[in-house]
Length: 129
Image (cartoon, rainbow, N blue to C red; front, top):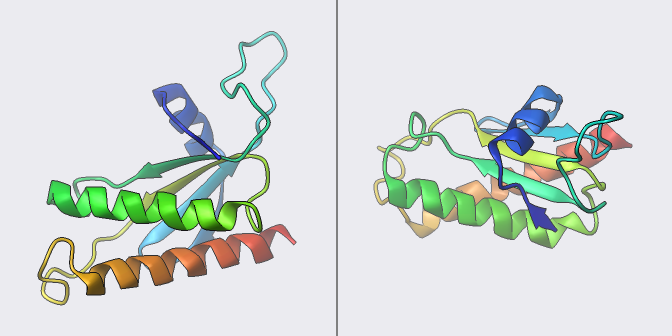
């Protein structure tokens, strides 16, 4: 699994289709083929993944980083089985309640994020089939 690095890569994927949604996350996907005559954005035919966790929805940097780590960990474990060779972006689209998840990196928050990411990837796999 490769990680998205450039702004152009993220913009290309976000311009693609939204494949699956949950209460807090959305999964965007685009094909890896480049338009004729253009330089390819993705060097290899592989599963590409990026994570977007806006400050709007996760105010503390420690929370944003913990959510990103969960996104990459869960997606790496599931990439062989469910994600096709394409570019994907997992985007946080709503905040987690700070009254329920008081600590920025609590085990309760990590478990909730992991469960919702697994649900998101499962929905993406069924949408593809």
